Image (cartoon, rainbow, N blue to C red; front, side, top):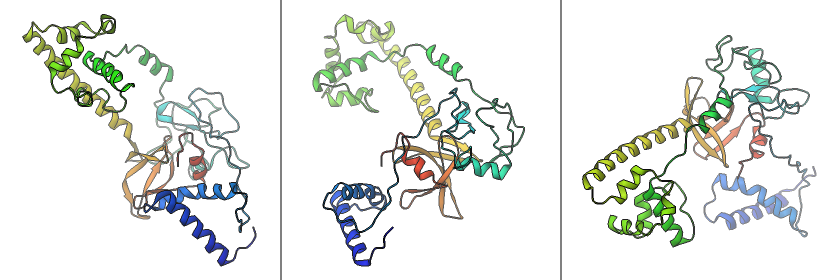
Length: 333
């Protein structure tokens, strides 16, 4: 790399700051400036008259990271280790270090404990841990593997979910009004749909329901149809409404519980909350580490990949994991 004097360096930095201000205005956070570096360098490379005071060696971007799945055929070009993957064992999707068969993360664990507790993917899946490991992992402890085929069969046999006919009717009216189906977390919220459609009373909603054709109600349950259409039996409708409210409350509690289970995992006797970073899902420890004043971060395979600084909102990756992060299929800086 050729040398660069202070004048050239100052000029280059001034151009970068001007470009960043043009992109983000006064919102020049560390994270925004960090993500703007690639855009700025690309603009220099694409400009035929651009000055290039620094002779840079640009690393060729490798292809998108391979994502392995449970039951896949062993791939010798990837790390040979088997990973937990929430009980559905699969091959590690990281690239091995030069001259080796495992990635940097698993190499460090093998050095520390004498071997990898879940074994190599090309070997028979062990029923117990083969070596000690991080946290409470002990050699000989039982490994409660899950069967992906059994889980898929349960999903298929769970039946068809029947939606409240009132919601379906309001969604149809929304599509007629705005030319598209409602989307988002409130798309099935009756009050939200009524607000968007300027429906101020139940009578207006019921009048709009009367225009619905019989073909649109074929798949709806008889109980739901009776609740909405049988206006002559007020007591029965009120009783059914109470049952529906109870079922909806139970359903909301169950969905809330499932959401919490998705967002929190336990590892090494500590809890980790879901964290989105550049579009990629990680898990941030709820306890701050007193040694470096930051939070430990895991990937979805429950491997420690770096540390999160809450002040600047940045993750400092371990052992070259920044390259793996940038090559992730969900990466959006």
